[in-house]
Image (cartoon, rainbow over all chains, first blue to last red; front, top):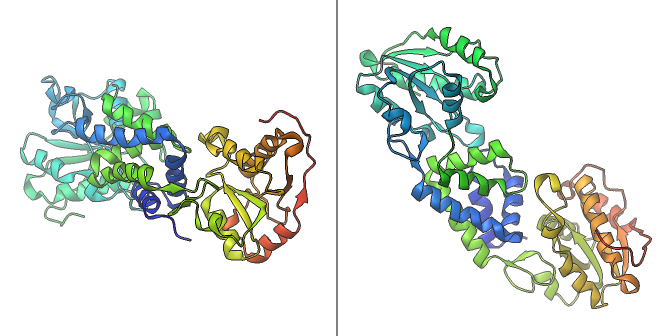
Length: 208
Length: 208
């Protein structure tokens, strides 16, 4: 007994999202059929796609473009922290220990849940680096498997820049492995920024 | 740093779905912003709401209304199995051990994940029972916590019918507790149907 086409299409559409498996996709689709408020999601998606701005410089979600941080002349633009998500920017800003600029990937590499390299907008990061203003990229991804894989991916992409590549560092493993940046206190974030270590580039290696 | 309104609205819309917490809702919303295919979900929701039929008799998703099973004159309409989901109908049909009719709740009671009694369409079930054709309701929900809570909810709703209530039975606990109906083999389903036990009604008790 197959589902009607429209129901199967809805299940398939949910399955395209990271972390949504077959059983969860069915449960979400059935919820659409039984709860009228679920239609709000269709409206919210359309509105977000139309209205939600992402800063064309750093990729963060933002009311303005460029965003407040990218427009702030007092930030140190020679320093660029690459983070996974907007709340990681928030965590570093709230800690008050970083005055450089950001690049927000909007996710971490996780093929198992459907987040692939192509989702992370690395071309836009490389475009920024080609301007030559950035002297050091700090890989500030989470200290977990996805964050490490993402850091490696970004490192390999930067290596394709060859001699024009900036220095690349990784936040020190003062971060507790397996944790999540937004839950750490200021002291840990400060230690991690101060203890960052430079990575050895292999210029010309093809990126991943 | 709050999210732009359209992004926050999108996160809020995802959170209305059962089993979607704050972190997952953010991850799904960010995916909409970074992957153009995510817009397909908005189209799929609109299409499913417009086109996907639910059988007005049994509540199952269906191409036709009434559905194939509800239109089948050879089914025993004195017997009504209440199941959680369409694939539970499929499992019982594939086992070939049941010839009665069905009522599909499209979910199980699970306040923690947002599925409430109001989602399960019990008024429609009671409407069917008031016709007097059904002599026995078989509570064929999963043998897990949500299924047991759902069975209890349906039992209490039927008790509000007083003297006109049909007999109510529950599938025998030949079903392995904690399991899920769609993964069981025919023998277990057959044992459970044959061993079903009648529940003692307390007519007039107010429903849950």
